Length: 108
Length: 114
Image (spheres, rainbow over the protein chains, first blue to last red):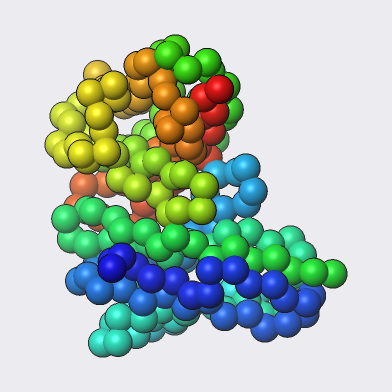
């Protein structure tokens, strides 16, 4: 079993839809990151969370430490949101565990 | 540009050749990490440095792989006698000691072994 599990693996949405990507983890963490990776491109860090909720533009990330679960929400999705979204958790030993990613395609 | 810089962005090489990648971290970051990402998978840890010291190596890092950070600034990752299975995205990240905050990734080097 992977330390970090993401769902769904693949997601196709119509432009304008509300999108949720889920991440569950089994290790103790100091922080959780949501990362975005475009095809052929590098990784961009979207959020770093240790508790509660953060919002940036149309993106919202939440974390429930007790349940070891985080969600990434995209409101009013747009084709440019099409990318792979990766959940990564870091522990106090500076070790990071990555989910396998959720591939999102937003259709105009 | 104050981000993590990786060169080259893309590398195509013939099987059996040696390749070297470079990572320039954020200047004040004293930790530097290398990860490998194959298609459809999340990044896998390879090794990390604190300043110039290589503190941990994954068993994924076979004898054909070597990484250095000679002056505690930039790092190089060399793969000798490349194999087709080495084809992947090689990612570099940097951070400050003891912090998972400000953990910054580079854009990666995509290696294709033909």
